[in-house]
Length: 338
Image (cartoon, rainbow, N blue to C red; front, side, top):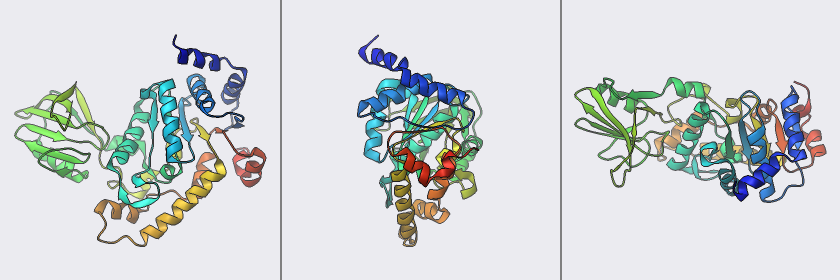
């Protein structure tokens, strides 16, 4: 066992960690616990240990809400090292800079899509690290995503014209070469496409109308990365779905998902600022802005700050910082019986 594994095993048997886990597992109502007195990496070790040992229904899903994007990045790095990269996911906002609504980040949009897609299909420990600006944006409900996935399997028949029609309907753009999510190209019996829910593009090779090979490839070198037996193509989650098909991340997660809140009062204040800034920007959106931006703000794909508190009510909560007496006084509904 390496040093990191040894440290984690020590935390796994720590009486305080065990007391928290026992309380989480035994209490039928959503619990509220403050884990105080932790600094630096100690917070991450405790989070990792509880994530490794807390099992209750679908309770192996954990949501860590940092105060800002920078803090979230540090927490992500810690937890990836302790739990493995396949178990820890980053959930960013969709924009180049938090609350700067004028420039979208396709990379971060892809990360949001990947996270939602993977946690709905993954068993075992799943930890999502996020921050207020990312929570402010709604996500497409997982069941809606599943209903709208395009699946292609090796050996199946595939009509190229129909595939092109579906891809355009789902928000993809045709280009000579694919290099970013949302693009596809057709050259003879080869279809290249970059899904909104994958970090590498796919290549579909046909023999007549039969899918002969499926693979991922490097868009810069065109070299194959991995052979596949099937692939799933995710549509543009920002623009292809309406308001009633979207919800807050907290609403999407199962009620047993454990939520770590860094600072509740700061979270509420930052969400309120997001709301005010988005309303201001929405009033200024014009035909000069990108179609994707216009669609996002036309549909108001955001969560009201008060609704975040309502969504928190159904989840077990662990507070890392803040005054519990003050939190109880300011938000009594969080502590009332369901």
